[in-house]
Image 1 (tube, rainbow, N blue to C red):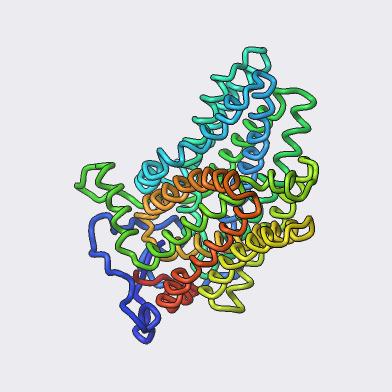
Image 2 (image 1 turned 30 degrees about the horizontal axis):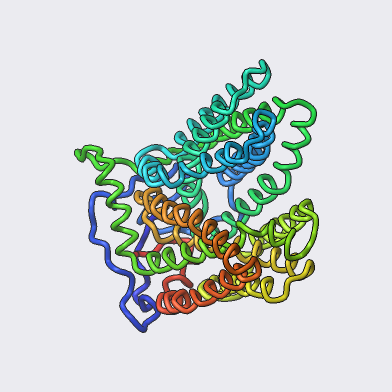
Length: 458
């Protein structure tokens, strides 16, 4: 998001240490005028009406429809796969091919998002997804579906999603004021949990029972509708290339990497958050085994704990903006991270159905609070012209460590037992609270003063 000078009366970085590292001005920091109808970067911002505005709700509706399509497709692909093969490795490969593009292309997609009109990039992404799923639908209808087609579709959809998702988060701070970021992100995240988590799976399963092609047809139609809705979004959303400077993808990516490395608050929070996400995944990866082997429940009961986590996520997404109105943002972020660590630890020490249900809801809620707040902080601090690249770097780190965490969880469970995985994961997350609190405290003034409708100099 764009920046304007900080008030001279405000100390930097909490007053007990140096402020955020100064990033020298470079051509990459030049930001083109923002979307029509809103103040451009560096302009004084006059508080507008309290609502989020028509442009946000168009983006919200398009994103929600797209997430519903994602949820339907995510359950339909493995359902179709098991009708073609019963080889566990072949079926599991689908998940890997959906995830792999985030490791390979998140930074490249971020650079493209910073180079292109973000609305147009999202529209093209949705129409490409429409075609990919549409072709798969035709193959299912004609009885020619094969596993290689599912692999190609999964990889293609995952690749396009890296561009679309980066563009959504880069576009949102242009549509709302900075003091509305938590509210806007909370709405988007809560809707994603409902559509992708709650509605997508049962709807996709029900449609598949009726006809194998139906969920793919619904998925393709959802992407098409989401793209059409974006056509109604007015304005130009391109940060703009620097005149006379030839495009150079490697240099542009390097600028994003260097900006994040030189920005001490975001660098510290990113590294700690990435390690915490890996530990979270270590426990999550063996959760279904914990339900079956430790709690002695049927495998079908796993769905109820996923439901509890999703319900907690919806509450967390909607509650995040309310929490930062009442307490300092840095304090809420610290508590959100500590809740997840404490919940996993308690689930491992005191295993029971009630405890796991409660901790699942707590983890789901605290993670959504954290996601909403950290995304809002990024959107407020990262210059608009660099946002896609910086977010791409962050997500490459995050998605790169998640499979390592999952594998580590499996190895720990095999060596020391399932309960130990939860205790170790939760304990490490609580230990990570020490450096996290140090970073949040040191830069508390910066983090806690992102509520003005204007912007700040980082």
